[in-house]
Length: 239
Image (tube, rainbow, N blue to C red; front, side, top):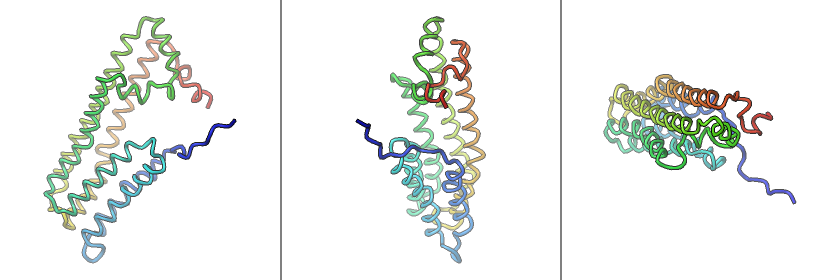
């Protein structure tokens, strides 16, 4: 008897498409088409935000089991649109920009008080690594306690990357977006902030996360003596 096929397709990373739809296209619309001679400030804001919102909704519906980040993105875009359309003080935008990564960082910290710290869930799991093999080697080398300590430290470092992002988001929003919401200038500044945030915040944050994962991998290598190929989950090693 064959197992029933799943209706949810596997998610394939598409960083170029994500970058274009979520960053580049909305920024161009907000910066170049917010004037009254084009779309106007309200229509440009709606159209610019529709791209990341629509893409996030598409990803969430199609790959619903794997897109917590898409959900957060939709919430973030929705709040940005609300601030612009309701013409709230631009200071709320800075608060919103800081709040999203701060909430994620807080969730990472809270996870350290549970049985499943976020770094363990993301990396140290049977879908990525041969956990049984690593655990056996750690016990044999009497290094389990040291590994758990370093795993916890990696989780704190991970939370720190979101703290960095939260602070930088706030500073960037306060620095760039200074015009009243609901105006052409506000839209142009919002587009500029979206473009600038990628090299100034996203790339450094990704670099810090890669360093954290490298730190954790070096820990596994030192405490077990295994190479990366030797501790990959069997289905990944076969590939």
